[in-house]
Image (cartoon, rainbow, N blue to C red; front, side):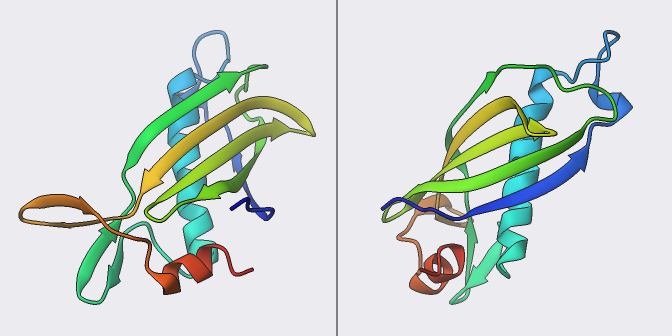
Length: 138
């Protein structure tokens, strides 16, 4: 199932996120991917930690990658566009595009799995219909 909708999250590159050359460190892109994903969940009335039918649901990552094209620098205003590219029975594949003034800086991808957790650990479950509908209402 291909998901045509997207969500854009904007943030400013902070001084502490850059090196002496004024370039954002690559590891920050992974933090920003997660930050934008969390903002997407909030925008549809959810959280990445959700209580559902007396269970705690979370979305651990099983795969991440990021391809870099142009550096992000201190005080760059980033537009981070989040798209669901695939929604499976238990997983979501995300594409996260970083841009500045219409120029693509990087392209990240992540796959998360819907899980419950308790004292025994994590267990994947099918994405509940109510949550699926909020994430992709079409």
